[in-house]
Structures are given as C-alpha cells and as structure tokens.
Image 1 (cartoon, rainbow, N blue to C red):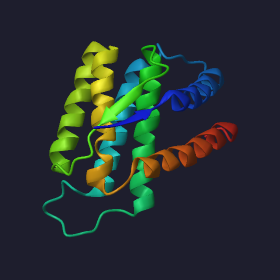
Image 2 (image 1 turned 180 degrees about the vertical axis):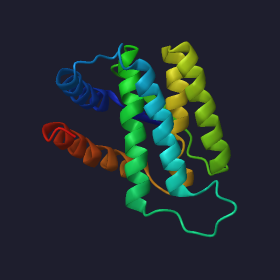
Image 3 (image 1 turned 120 degrees about the vertical axis):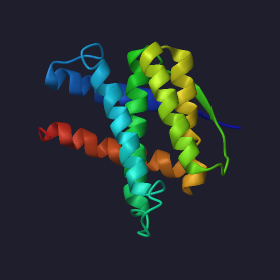
Image 4 (image 1 turned 90 degrees about the vertical axis):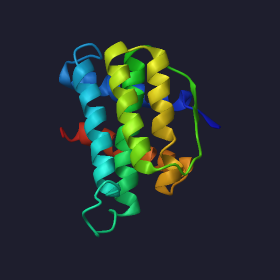
Length: 164
C-alpha cells in the first residue's frame, strides 16, 4: 500500500468550491446530489477515454493528456464531495496493483454508490482509495495525476472568471 497526504489539495479545492458557490449562489448542501452524480459521470468519462471496457473495438485509448484530464476531473469531484461531509485533511492509502482495470472501475463505482447512500467518512475514504488505486493499472503515476489536477485547477478557475 502507498499513501498520499491530500490536505493541501482539500485546501485548493475548497477555494475553488467557495468561488463557485459565491458566483452561482449554491452550497455544498444544495449541490450534494449533483456533485455525486458529476463524480459518477466523470468516472464514466475516464472509462470512456481509456476504452478499457470496449471489447468490441480495436481503437486505441485517448491520449495520455485526455485520460489524465478526465482523471483530474474525477479528483476534483472526489475532493469536493469529501469537503461536503467535513473531510479537510486525510492521507489516502491506495494499492499499486496491476489488477484488471475493468474490475477496478466496477469496484470504484460500487464504492461510490455506497458512499452516495451513507455519505460518511468511512465509505468516502474507501471509494477515494479505489480511485487512487487506478493510477498504476492505467499506466500513470500519482505525480502524473497530481500534475493533471493542478493544470485542471487553473482551467477551472479561468472558467469561473470567464463565466463558463
């Protein structure tokens, strides 16, 4: 198992969330279901970009940049959902395993749905761990994901400034 301290990332995400809440007159409470659905959609977009489930197709996955961009979107919504239940600092443990990626995505979806029902820190951390455990089998490093997160953070702030 590997571990990553996410405290600074929660701080960054909170600043973006607060900017969005102010600009759009919403809150964690008023967007709770939409943020959870957005997380599920972003994971779906990540799966689509990898094309790992498309046994009927011979097309290659999307570019590394595209896959990491979708992964970063998922991280944004994971952190935001954590903040909504009061998580502001944590270290997440994740596996560096080459287990079947499709099984891992399935397990992640299941964990997200359990979190959706319970909305507690324990189920959140389990889902978050499964999310970070995707890094290795996708062929990336945690540093790749964190770099993509920071790049997307800059894009998301710019989008708010330009009334995206």
